[in-house]
Image 1 (tube, helix red, strand yellow):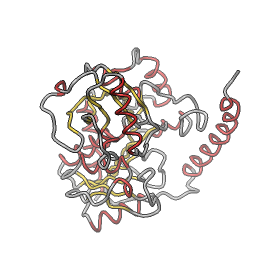
Image 2 (cartoon, helix red, strand yellow):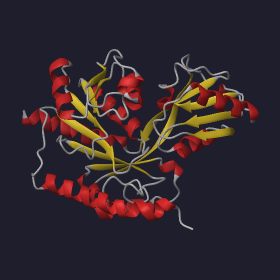
Image 3 (cartoon, rainbow, N blue to C red):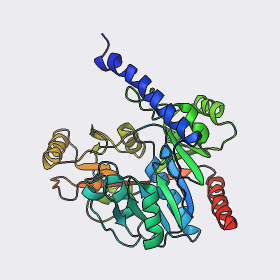
Image 4 (cartoon, helix red, strand yellow):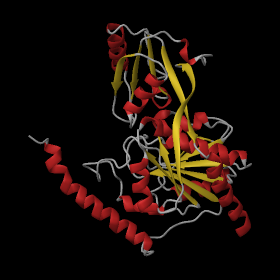
Amino acid sequence: MKPANSLILPPFSVLYSLATRLRLAAYRRHLLSVSKLDLAVISVGNITTGGTGKTPLVEWVCRVLAEEGKRVCVLTRGYRRQNPNEQVVVSDGNKILADVTTAGDEPLLLARNLLRVAAVVCNSNRTEAGRWAINNLQSEAFVLDDGFQHLQLARDLNIVTIDATNPWGGGMLPSGHLREPLSGLARADCIVLTRTDEQMGLEPITATLQRIVGRTPIFRSRMRTSGLRRLGGETLDQVSSIQKPVAAFCGVGNPESFFSHLRREGYELAVARAFPDHYNYHQVDVDRIVAEARGKGAASILTTAKDAVKLSSLHFELPCYVLEIKIAIEDETHLIQMIRSQLNQRIANH
């Protein structure tokens, strides 16, 4: 017998697809207006919901722009923050100015990781946020977080992440995870395939992409461990120095990727507990994780940096550690050159 959702949701997916196509067509025909900022805008987005490795790529792009001598600002919506219609300056680039409730988990994570590299501003109106940042933060370049479908703001470079472990999302929303038809990838200036080390045989994915995007560059990438730290405390000298086996938990878009990453790093997982993406933890959740960990003989607990920003007020009766990751891009020199080219073009046009 088929699950109820498999019968109910497909008609809504058809309607969603139609609405999305109409919206895209309205922008192509200039029926909906597009705003422009006077500075370079690099968009990092995806074509599916859920975790595609977008946030580490946003951080990477910010660092590239900063190394080019630019004062960088991330423009983001701030998913599931307390007051989504208000602008929140999460960081001015030098200090954190908001908490996880007002900013959302991913903007706060970006703000912490990018101190002295980039400012982070949450606003559903990215153009308004960008103009504010130019006037108040003297921003010189922007990274548009989750910007592929945010067509109201023009961009100089459109980077799209695709998760190699689930590239097409099982169809259109709400029955699948596709935000728009795959034909929309033709708008991309380049594709970054993420988690390529977790997927055997990438040729079918790249062949499908090439049919859609032609000669548009396709970069391969994977996630690397950049460190391990005690929750709310010090960084460990060696990633392998914590007691095993471990209990792992997360509330991210692709939890199995996190668990697989830990196993590849040599951790034996006595517990692998997944919560919904952007989950807000309570003490009862932590207590249950600790109890399950103890029951399975785990001496330590591991979670993600995205989850950690929501755990500072909670108490763990077992040591809890945070795995830090960064993105490693094959042929990153080519992608850096694409970004530099857009910066130079902006300078030439002014």
